[in-house]
Image (cartoon, rainbow, N blue to C red):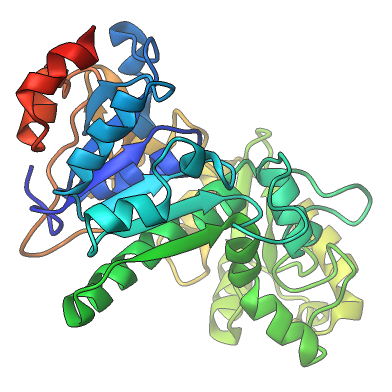
Length: 373
């Protein structure tokens, strides 16, 4: 598969959520990724729907057997990166902790993905995305003022604050290793990553421009010019006219000629202006408003559902979605001018015989028969 990471070799210790997403990103960009999973985890018909497992080979190993750990260590001798997402201490108990792996491959980048991090009072506790982003302060800022904060799917912890931070950390470590020739451990915690995603808000709060009151700030639904609105057909419109010139175009295109709207940046006026704008936007359907507003500097877009988004003309022209083995899914991103990523293969379509995969990664063929037994 072409792509900017062609030639990089990655071992993924199969887990849930952020680890597979991170490994998917590497596979999308052309890295050769082998997914080590427990026996019985793979099912050809089910696997084609596992978008996060696309584009890589799969090898089933019973990690309770010492021969399996030795097999992974043999593969590590050829690997550039290892990705694991278990609780602290699990890899060490399997004989695959950082010390053992770096002893076999001193230049290895050992990527560790956890919710709480490798140390700290909560390090060994169970948790999920909503717990990690709650601890970072990120969850508090989501939702309306009259209720508890709703979970923003698992974008902020698992994928943004977790997988993408791990991918960035791994690539930073790979770059450094070119200079030093040495590998290292990347400790990516979703609590850390979610906090980092909140950097702008913490800065604004320190400057007195952001409050702890949810739904009262410029970007959390407090401002009338930055929110989602219900249209006549029950569908929604996303408005984000922050800058004065964009706000002016929004008013002009909506036919608003009311002096009250001149108080754009007065938070005390926002509740009244939001009610007025909401009433206006309910007078037309979403698509009627799009004919007036979409594509202009009014900063308005339709809120599309899972079926509508792939069919939008902009997404279609950019081929933002692809169909792989009958499954519609987002295409690899971002785009590269000289080394573009190829269309990914489905997890069920990229499998090779595990014997071939392992021998290709330097495992002694004579040991594979005993391992198979």
